[in-house]
Image (cartoon, rainbow, N blue to C red; front, side):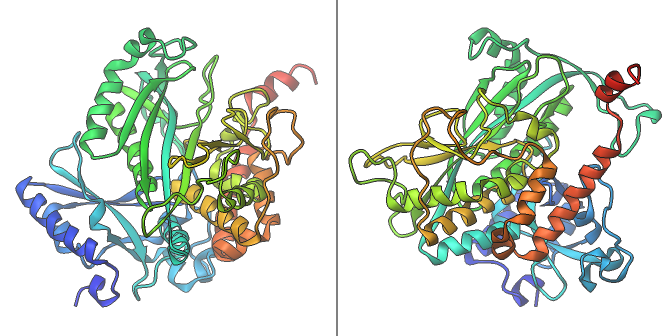
Length: 478
């Protein structure tokens, strides 16, 4: 009996998808299949197998070392993996032991930029079938299950901003190696600041068209492409989808964009504020709603004139505001991302909501009997792990529903309204998470402590560096 059957890991839909996968692999004469899982940072890690090997291991999984779960953003291992419990307090994680990547056949794609290569997203399991508790896709599945038990599904649409540059020097000499390595030197594709003009779009169209072609070929629900306000900045938006799909879409989109760009001599980055002159921050706006499983009715939709949200929607909104500070470590997980939270900008700086106002954190769109009623969370950065971002939204929102939290009045002056300020740094966000017992209960102490440890390792490395600002400020003065 296979590992999948023994532990009943696949649904009927996944079993059917596996049959189709084998047929497509044969018809397309695939040579290799990439097995990947989204790590703690929302970065794909995994192995590439010869197609026949990948198909034979489809129901038994592929081993991968647990040290992949111990990495910070420099790919350094920040847990003492060779001590008892491996730094995780679990014997299964010590010594760099293996876990299994179990493919989800419903995610199967053939990569348009590598047409003899297939791709599968995987979930992590221990040898006894238990899900690995630090795997973020599994955490998001648990949040979706909590919704499902109440008779609801999560719907999300994506607005993702990012930068694309032409590579002038890839920095691939031996002396450029490091952990992390030297970033490439780049030049702009557009000067920016001609917002939504056709001229600027046409300057970036050659690479945007390459990305569009392959993203559509992947079957991702692309809706629009825009040239954003900043130099060499673009935005792609995606149609609303249900459940796991929007998070999986974000993972594959980011990975696809970077691969497609690199193959054509470009560098794409989802870093919030790249270090270039006159930069404009990139954000990731998450449009979300809750619908009933039977009938698909929008649970946020108001049926009363003058009310933008239903009582359910108002309480859900109240939950997002209640846990806004603690959840920023999931929505904005990098040191760089907190440079975006600035007053009187198109980014929020405090936990407030407003009706169709682009200065607030949570923008309420729709109204009475509008089936498209939704909440747009404008707080996230495009580097966020989508599974943690979306799980934090669902769990916070449901807490608001359970406690009938009142979000208060709409804020018409978002940078003047009195409200809890968002964290100004990743360290402040980590403290906010540690001080809010809610996420420890909702996500588990094990997961929260694990994530805090990784983020603190990142912060400590940053604080040990002497920045150019410090050199300019103090070297001559003192």
